[in-house]
Image 1 (cartoon, rainbow, N blue to C red):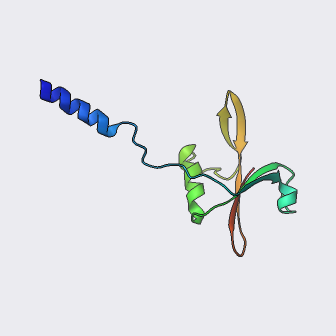
Image 2 (image 1 turned 135 degrees about the vertical axis):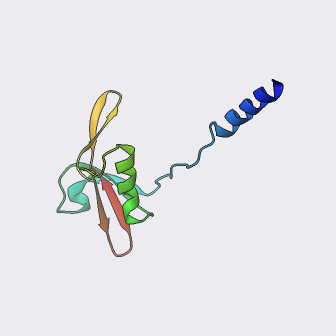
Image 3 (image 1 turned 90 degrees about the vertical axis):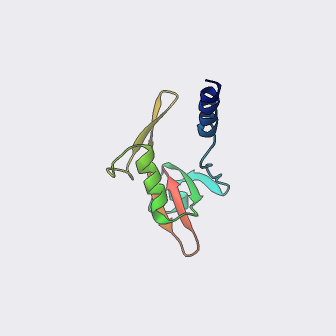
Length: 104
């Protein structure tokens, strides 16, 4: 009996509260209007940051996080914060030296 309780306690200890991945910190970002960043964009407020990962990672993250099944991933994904609904839209630009992602 004592061994069983010890085994169950050990299993819970191994499977609990150990983070498998830690979210990266975005250090170099800008909050700006779209027109100031690129003239062809709308006047919406944007969060612009440099993406160090490959092209499909952010798309896959948004698709998996919001369970979109590859439908309308780029266009106005609804999410809630404190019972208020917001919409997420993202675009990707590649410049000669940087890959930038803007969240609209």
